[in-house]
Image (cartoon, rainbow, N blue to C red; front, side, top):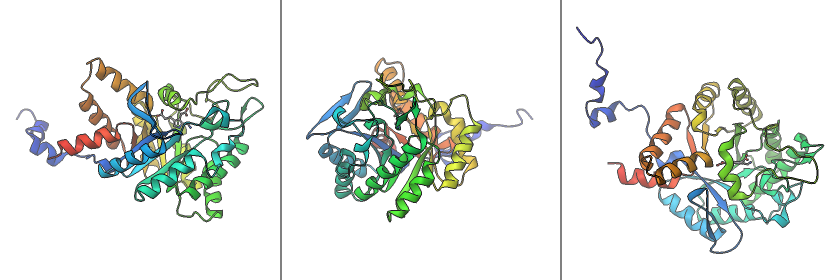
Length: 334
Ligand code: PBG
């Protein structure tokens, strides 16, 4: 008998393929990252991210309603802060009436069932473009944690469902959990960016928020490598994720996505809480640019990438493709 195995029997037609398919995608798997700006009726496209905009709160709310109708249940939100509000302490981050806090309130009022996850990190508020407070030429870990706790509590007061610390300071998950509990926010969850790598894939995001590390009057690190992880490392990601579980994280994230699917799987196998993945700005830009040139089939590539995140072990995918993919699923699911 030859061949001994005929794997193709399970691929004969779409019906059998659909019966044996191991992974499925739905709009509920996606979280949509949104950039918020001051003003009214503001909608500015990010040059390096075609189809992605910085919107004022009013237009953000309208967009959130559309996303909800498409089946998307979570948004990650980031703000573009005016330069005049930036300093080294990042204190605008816990202004209860700041842009982020107003955005959270507006979204939760208009669409209470949408899960809102504001980003917790100081970079949009830092004159130096770093995720924490600069002291003696580096980001000061524990002083930054004090600031992050104030920031997270302020987000919780505004109505955030989860806070999403993306700063990579040591010990911040425990500090945030204690701070939220002490302020009475036991039900506000923490989605930890547990394994966040120092990656060049974040370039377009830093354009969107004008948050790249900057030249300064004092000594500051030129990049984020003293806190974000070295992309040569794998075991370290497991260590960071396990620590965050011990400290009280409700979900852990791996970031970036595509080049890090081994890490997604490794972390998935190591922890017993949901693993999320961030399909970051540079990954989005690459697909858009190649599709614009006619070099790739945009929709096919988009859906393949998203499916592969789930196959790798991600329960949730934060992706700038969330809306387009939800529309695709609506039009193509029979
Ligand atoms: C900052 C933050 C970054 C991203 C999310 N939060 C950028 C950075 O660390 O410099 C990147 C997201 C993306 O590229 O889409 N705390």
